[in-house]
Length: 186
Image (cartoon, rainbow, N blue to C red; front, side):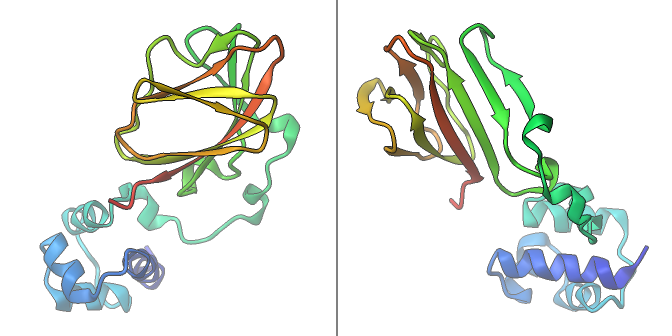
């Protein structure tokens, strides 16, 4: 294991979370001196320490070991997009647009909502993700906490965590909605 690369990764995540070494050490339950040694590549942390670090940074443990970026993985060709079907695949299709999907801190999806259909019978609710949706083609309705809003092509809606929502297509044409989902900062 390259301790220097591990340390750089921990430092990068800590700085991204805008934490001082002292704040991070308190949050993780690890001494500041050990955090400093890890970040400088001068320590060989145990698995239990790495688990505490990952938990405090709110990242999967494996992400601490991903140090080199394969630039080929940063390109996603249209023909290689993965499709995700929801409840009734006759009416809704999501295409994953995020290159290097498992390593990204953001999810980008394009939804094809068929004519006269809805994303779900009830609603979606994201526990810890913030969502931005852009109507890319056609018109749609978004239902937020039971209240419907009409959206024209180009309109944008922000959906914070814990907001019950769904999308409706009341037209006779298929529409496309672009979704950007990020971890909640709260």
